[in-house]
Image (cartoon, rainbow, N blue to C red; front, top):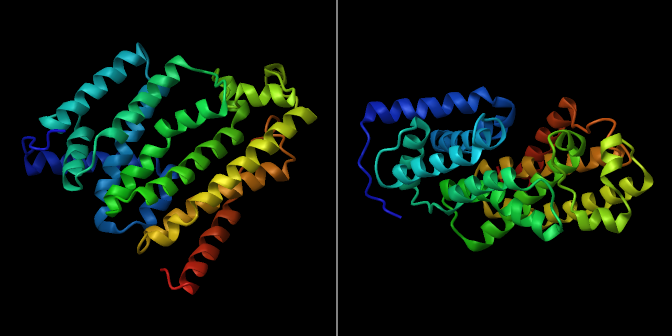
Length: 294
């Protein structure tokens, strides 16, 4: 990747970062933890990453017209941000972030490709196919954040991948009905066949014993992924530890909510209450402090 891009004017760069911050704060429900617990001096760069991810996902999920063409144009502007001056202000800030932290372009291109996959694929034949999708849609974000935190180790990336994939899967199991209404099923077809569960049950909102057994299987498999990624917390420094711990605890709480509903996610979407979120924050912070890991 070319790193010697033309420097943007300080005024233009400041405006670009301000635009990214506005985007992040405009979607505050999705960015609360990072805003509160990451070191303040890193927030502008995390906002730039978030704004890139948000815009990429919006192109893949909500844009009108030819979404594949729009994603191609977005990647072309990403190329310009790496070697020249991009057209979009978000990419102006992102290019500066990439150069500051010497980040590879792979995670950014993977995320764009994940949104191309969304246009072409609405079903996943195997669990391996689903993991490949998560490797493009979820795992790159963890790598981006690790680069900003100064951690470039393969082991931290591996642990981050387990956590990010688990978070993505927990969201899929929480939103089986919503995703179906958008034309997508993330439950692997091989698993549906194994448990004798058909698409008609999802369409009709029938949480049969077969469907509940299938969800129980997926939830427990996802729980093991969360547990696999937990050692990442002890590898991080400072307040970022609390952030990652909360993401993991929050994801596990979603799985617990699914279990409390006896794996029926078709009649009511399982959620984590505000009180539960507050308890998670307090208990996780207290535990890390007790371990000497503020």
